[in-house]
Length: 337
Figure 1 (cartoon, rainbow, N blue to C red):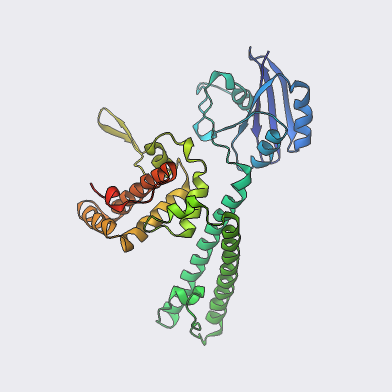
Figure 2 (figure 1 turned 90 degrees about the vertical axis):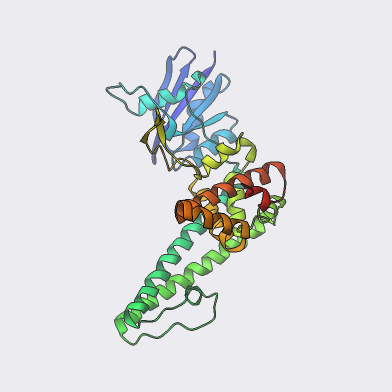
């Protein structure tokens, strides 16, 4: 008889439930977040255990990797898409784990388990994105101080260091301390960002997929790395529309009888791909004539925001075919209608 396991994962412990094909609960136990303890509990049932469903929380890496390395078949459950019986009067970790263990019913939406070999590089680029945002916050704060105290506009390139020019001097000591604090933070963040980019470049070594992505006007090395790593295996998307939805490049709305009933889940998808394609859209408007013409026409019809989103959607669809079919970018085909 086959057995199924569900694990409700938390920050410092997890609840493990083991059931058989008749939904009889064989094991129900709260365990500390220690892989050796979990493997010891599962060991007596190893031969009959068909699959393990793990809740996709922020800290699932260690558990899923450890179970897969031990030879177990693991499913990563998308918790945001799981629906339980809404009439339940009481629900706890035991009930959640039991629901996760019901894998054979096919009611659990499972997520993609990104290959461990490239996950670290992908997460490194995600940390770079956070550092860039922190640097931008400090740059804007310093520029505001200059504008308020000296009525001068300092270039962001000067503050970041891409343009060699000294920062203007502020005589008032309190304001000078604020400016100096931002300067030190910006320099430190810039150095760490450069270190991350150097390591990512060494790890990826300009693979063909990233070179193909850079044939798209508006996509440079950083955006190409981000798109390639966040997408992973393009074959997991069966349709271009599914990929565009995952990139958050389609409108989210709920319609019934021709009337709008809500906005749906606009945050469902990959935030980093959404950022990458919207950044690429802004660059495409600057450097690609077809994109600029489309942007101007769309802006007159709707708005600038809608126009940028439309171009981001088009670029996402183009990148899907570039990665799937190994073809170069064709601007005329993309903006033909």
